[in-house]
Length: 524
Image (cartoon, rainbow, N blue to C red; front, side, top):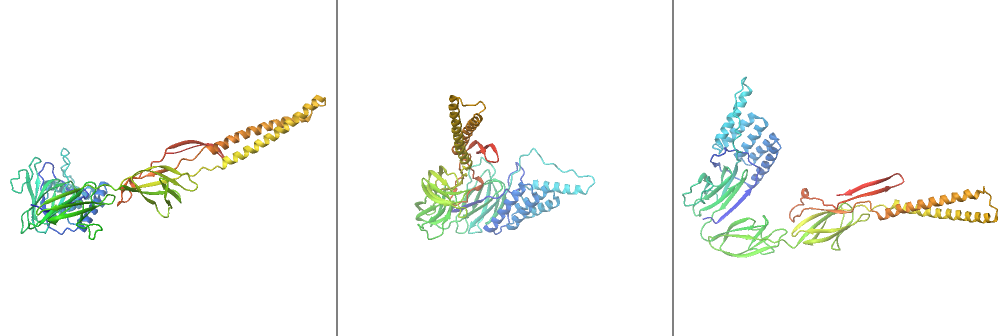
């Protein structure tokens, strides 16, 4: 019976090892070698880089990345990937030699028959280059389903050296594995002392450690996905004084667990979720903490030999953070009518802690149109707000038109009065019989009257232009861009941030001393 087990699944780029479809999967142990977390992480990074380059059809660069992965951690699957890249790049000689290196590192691979045919095909292609009459090569069978990609299993135990076995479920309808034997539909595909490194195809596996020295038997099942490195570790139990505790959280992985260490914690975390380990029997208390969530605590009792799983449900805190920047200097930021800061580009964004829910946001700066609107604050998360303030429209043209309107109105009134004065004098002279037909005052009065009407008309038109300039706003409104929520401990997801401006479209006359036109502008 197993009392302590931990399962770490480290997702790597797809391993390009290929198996023949419909062939029973075989899993064979590689030579035990030290597997350090640092070297495994280096191999993972090179694998990811190689897979990315392979997807971009940069095969030679991908081959170099897989070569570096093999240098970091000599797993045979990396050699297979390197050989595939050479083959794709047309480097047939290098592909052939690397496939042969793979066979030396993995003498009995799961895809042995298929690999031999592949090597024969490469040899034939290479020979055909130097033969007047090319030797026909066998084309791939297009009727077969896509070949499965291989994965790696690193089976460790504490203490090491325990006799381990790996069984594959070859019949999907087979019953659960039984340590007592009689397991129809299961096939033992690898065995040996831990650490046991094995190449395998995707599927369900049963991993076990026999009763060994003073340690109890350990059994567990592992689902292996395509193209992964699965690191499984079991801590073997000894005696009758310990129990196994496993702690998981539904909402978040990586929450810190403190065991029998109340706040303020004096020791390092017992682990991070999901986590399991042997602990002494008796009463215990755990505290689980994660950024953006309320601390969780629970008291429990564990018995000798008991396997206990605690699944904690964490609740979000009742507040979030707004991280606000903008396109101007000295932007005053107010939330619900209270100023929370002033944004300056050199000082970085204004970060404000706000209760969850909808709040009113106002941003204003000198010479800019203010923004007012509502923003949703997520519980236990941060949200970026980018303020885009529009310039206030200039009123110079409107004021100029108003001044000219007043001037032309005054001139019209003056000329109109002069015209009326001349008309009165002429009427008096006509009654007295002294008005001559060619009196020059007749033309003078007409000129004054026409000029007065022109002045009134120009004043009216200019007054309309001035009123339009004062009342009509030719610039778009200010708006904000709202980013997607992200966790307190994470960096802002800049790639996912999207702007949602207020849409507007307007047709505006443009009047200046140089040009007159209609300006169509908008914001979307």
